[in-house]
Picture (cartoon, rainbow over the protein chains, first blue to last red):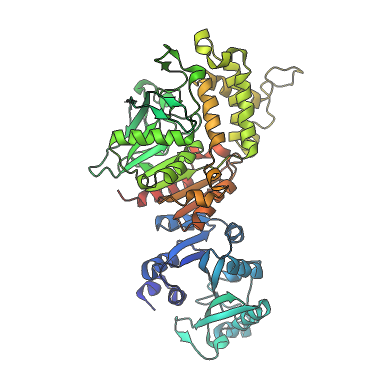
Amino acid sequence: MTENAIALGRPDFDVIAAWVQPNERVLDLGCGDGSLLKLLIATRGVRGWGIEIDNASVLAAIGNGINVIQSDLEAGLSGFENGEFDHVVLSRTLQTVRHTQRIIEEMLRVGREAVVSFPNFAYWKNRMAVMAGRMPVSEDLPHQWFDTPNIRFFTIADFDALCEEMGIVVKSRMVLDEKGNTVVEEANFLGSLAVYRLASG
Amino acid sequence: MSTHSVGHVTAQCARFDEPLTLKSGAVVPAYELVYETYGTLNAAKSNAILICHALSGHQHVAGYTDPERIGETLGWWDNMIGPGKPIDTEKFFVVGVNNLGGCHGSTGPSTLNPATGHPWGADFPLVTVEDWVQAQALLSDRLGIDAWAAVVGGSLGGMQALQWAMALPGRVRHAAVIAAAPRLTAENIAFNDVARQAILTDPDFHGGNFYQHHTKPARGLRLARMLGHITYLSDDQMAEKFGRKLKNDAIGYGYGVEFEVESYLRYQGDKFASWFDANTYLLMTKALDYFDPAHATDGNLAAALAKATAKFLVVSFSTDWRFSPARSREIVNALVHNGQDVASVEIASSFGHDSFLMKDEQYHAIVRAYMGRIET
């Protein structure tokens, strides 16, 4: 991990940074305080915009000098034309979105590629928790069941199946464990967080 | 007195003897612009912010003009501008100017036309947002300001900030476009026309030359303002503030003032008619109606904005139905389409279009954060 990604505690940011090129146009959905965009602008020289709904996050993003647009995700995308961005990023947020397929379709409409990261519900520690009778709480699923913003619980295998069903091409995939190390084998068992680079089929 | 006030301020006047050719082709042979300044212009002249006013605004943006009557003579955006305020006069040199055609000292319908010795009245040409920006640029030259750190405006003022960014891209580094729209809708123009008709059909209007008749179309102006005022508020806010409350305990089966809201509107209308010029009101509403930068690019707003190099802050308010958040979003989408820098916020506020003048915690924090990042 780069020092930036370590400082932010977001190993997936390094993966995303490796997939973007200088001067590309990047849209970060649910950009929070703009940490990812700030990293991509500083280390990769991209041109970035973010969409965020939360007041405190929008304020923080403006304080960070980020091109933040306050809007909910889906309304936020509807105003953009086809192919306006090189990459549209949705990091650790897909599991909170109700209209999963629609948001992925919209990302691939306005962007040449979509980058999606999400916690893998089938990570072995999560499986252990469920086997022990409790909903998992981990590095990548940090919330208790009663206060989680997550409404969709799915696994790497589930997401692969959805991509296939939607005719989406998985251009790259990186799977990380809880410490941010790359997982190569048995990804759906050993991986805590998955990062996908997607394109329309 | 607030410790965050710029204090006692006095307007200055800049006289221009070079004729100004307007968008309409009309020429104003010579004119004066009154303005106020707050804070100190730095040596590099890189910390200047221009505040553009809306329909009923003027050069007196912050501070007070009468130390004996501070409350009544506060500037119209005093909550936003001052030492330690979101637009901080300890960092910035802030300029407020009364636009050409105004009625607060700058040359306009109510000032004397040297050619006739009478007030300009109906002879004062219609001015546009483009004309205002042109005149403001000449004032900038006079003040020695090559480029504004920011041009800031709400409503019609936001249109001027947009126009600055498009027309004079090298002279504005940031544009704050607040509660504005890239052009008025038919509904908006319709409201403006009803307001104008109220003034134009007032028998005291005298074709715009009422000054010579020592009268003014106060009834028309009052109606125009009452109508406008309704559209600047929100349904929720009016329900909360007035509901169906009566002035007296029972209804009287007559046409006098019965409901609180009637009383309020008449008071606001009368107050406005006592200090504002009817010709200026007409002219300002026309400037609003005419503004349409995308007209020259076949309706393509992005193409119209493509020349801008400023970074943008676009702010809208949830209950503003006169300049709704969707209209601000048109500006934002066009800027993003062009790959331009823009931050955009939608403030949850119950005060309708007037929200942009109100002190709202999130709104002010956003402006403070944005202005705080501007390099001087």
